[in-house]
Image (tube, rainbow, N blue to C red):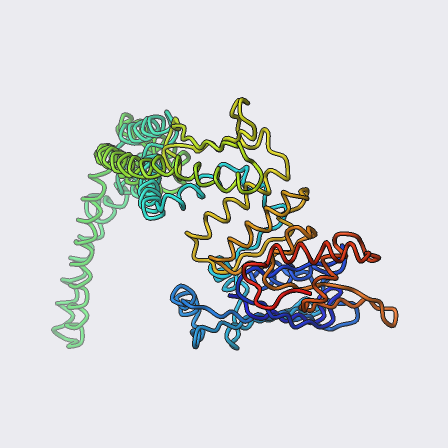
Length: 564
């Protein structure tokens, strides 16, 4: 339970140390006295967004802290362990949150630095806060379905179903990635085939780069090359008095000279080397000139080929290497599409299997929900009759969905018939705010036996009702307090008298500043507070006697010390 709440410099509260007890704790006070500050403090400790404007004027920081005394801490300790925080000692959990005027803040859990995110993880395990606006969640079909699932004790089946739904969703996403939009895959495959056919028609190779350009240049200048080459060959070996024959004559002269001049022998050897090299050069030149093709059809072919390569380079280049790489990539993609056909078939089989598993899990979940519909409807109807709807009916039905949803194969429909003979219609169509509040209270009473939350906070659950209905709400809250600690902010004296512990919120003005005081009430002051709620500040002795009688009736069975 929540045993202590400390508030410092929060809105109109300068300082408050509030102790709560087991059972039903009622909190009363005039409108505007500061009861909402308590709700704000608790929501801050649940990790809700903090606004520095709630810091008391003139203060540098505001602090809220809470002490929880827990009989079971395993779920809490699991969250703390995940956040690397100290575990609860002797069932005690300490929460503290500080807001500073500069917009910064701090969170401490069990006296160690923590985060608001960890507070949010702990919140569902500690305190269920229910305000007037929360009644509207009852009209939300998703809330109704979660409620039915929890009551049916089908959370495990719900998790199994959702995991299988996620598996099927991922398989469909993979299929979408493989297949793409309708027609997109076929269009891409057609484009790839056209690209490959275009390149294959030219069949480019690595020789179609610089080598092709050189071949074209030679073919275009073949006549000039042959003319200059043949003239050179004539001068070297084929013409009149060629250079090779001149060297032979010079060689004879050197050999004659060597008879009288010894070093001429060296000159003769050098000239021999020159003769050999000149012969080699002549042979190379003749062989190269033999490769020159001056035929007009050769030049035509090379010009056509060069134009084809240039067209490919403009479309898929800019270089020949880019064209060849583009060809390989297109081929690989086309092959991948062919492989994807097999993958698609495999995925279809997996989707069929996953769909069957999902349907199986959905049927199990639906069966448990269906079995719980009548039981939950009966339980809510019973609680509603305790709350003043003496002949109300609250049918709960399931309706199949066209397609499986993340939460199941069906939707839930909460109906409401406050009076017999009227047509049952959806709850949202006919319920007033007062009716919704009582339906929600009935549900809270039922779920308190199923939920692990030990502390429930109600902020004006009895709004828009009064008189005998208010008394019945108070009695119901008292019954609910047998299963959980209840904190109830109320303006209804008929409900407040059922509190086992009573706190009053009041305000005063001192030194031009508004002060809020939160204090527990003894018997005498409690009688006065109930009288005030009945008749205003200037209540009469008759009003006081009325208040005393209401308290006696509400506490006759459990009060050890008679009220006076």
